[in-house]
Image 1 (cartoon, rainbow, N blue to C red):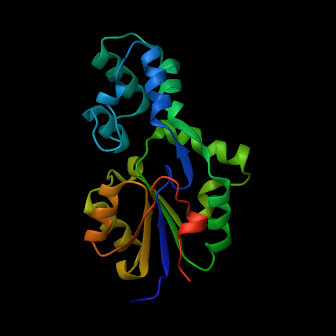
Image 2: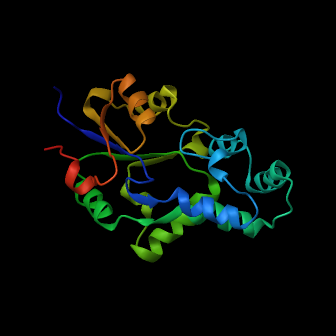
Image 3: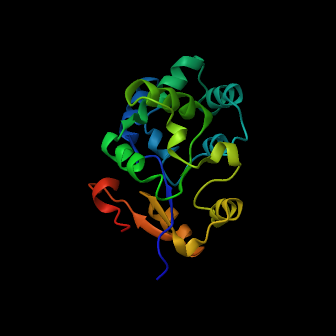
Length: 205
């Protein structure tokens, strides 16, 4: 088996804790019960997929959100509830990346959106210190790529752009469909399930 030379990390529940229940509760308080019927990790109303692909901007998202639910919520109400799932960085996992990202070219591939991005990027500076994106040779975000996991083409885009060999590259994610898609293009994978952590479960030596 080829030696591991490169690492590609997911963000949510890999390097950063997220809690969908907190978001669902926040939207219920705003008059949208059972928000889990509209947005989950793998199944969503098209509006949320469009946001994750950068096909709608923040203003368009707020307008379409209110239209979708026949509400008149303020921009801040929607953003605060949307960001409620963002819990915080896994400091020990971040330290692991810092300790290894010179030995292994390290990348990020996250399904996210501009609203969440505008929250977690400055949060890193406040809570950890420094620039989050400096942890990686290149960070890839779905809303900037116009592609999202689990589309195999999104993985191929990164491999081709960075000149990486799939067999020498480990992809770490907490979502099984993403793991299956990554493996389908030849990437080595670590399925980080609940209770697992990068710093104890990613063995590359």
